[in-house]
Length: 167
Image (cartoon, rainbow, N blue to C red):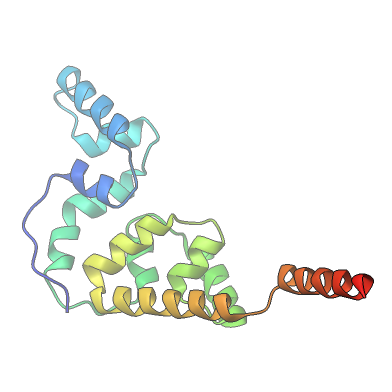
């Protein structure tokens, strides 16, 4: 179940989601002084920093989503936000089954979305999955530390051959 959050300005939400940078937000806010009839999301989209669908999603749906029970998978929301296309989702699902990775990890590996953006969605919509993802990443890291690498073998062979030549 997601946590209850209060309203945040769209610029702050987009920054937390790693969809825009602080300098981009500053420029858009400055532009808003000159284009008072335009909303911030429209300016960000006009500048090409986000899609208009993404701005609309965060303005119209985000607050409601983070305060209700989530019923769809992560890909559904990333698509609804204009961050992944249907074709992207098909590719991710195909790769996900091949490599037994989580959806978000596969999307990041494919270069379709930033890790911070996936974590933002997980943190706000699927907080229990974020904890599980962090734990799984930690376990993989621990397993990799315990593995013998090519460099380890090279090191041991070098030491062994040095001892043999000394005898």
